[in-house]
Length: 215
Ligand code: AMP
Image (tube, rainbow, N blue to C red; front, side, top):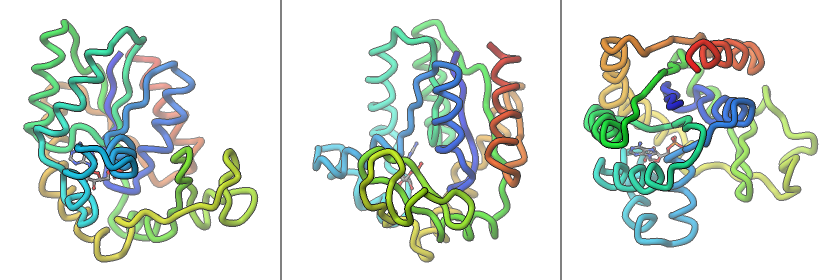
């Protein structure tokens, strides 16, 4: 099984991918999380990616395709749920080539539909746990103790790229470079659009059903 989560920043891809991958025993592969960890650890990849990420630009395709290739090679799993990848047409084409080489293909693309105004509202209220990466959202998805991660008990942080200026640029980049993927996957008959402005549970139920129909 290989499924992709598509949607603008703040549409809930990460939250849904974490729940779905656990429920369906898929490997949750978030390029954003991989890159943020690389920045935190000061690796070569992190050093190269940091400036792009801080300004809301996309990290170059060759770096992203390289890190995906390494993970696909590790293989041996029931399947993958990609979150935040692919983000450009060249990345989608690169993924198709890599999958063809190992006799696989993309089976489903879940596209979360959320309006621009909702995205801006959500990102300005978003916090994350620097230890387990769980995200919280004021006022909709509150931690049990204010400002503290439910699982790790550590203080929550705000992502540097969730500032108003950078959010505007991330939306612009999304429209220019990532939204064309809707047509790319629609033409292949793989795109399922899901209304992302409902409760987390309602969206989850919808997506889980789509995955069940595909598996
Ligand atoms: P995300 O957590 O998915 O919102 O990603 C945070 C940032 O990481 C993005 O704004 C990009 O700078 C970078 N990034 C994540 N995934 C990709 C990707 N597939 N291609 C290029 N840049 C990416």
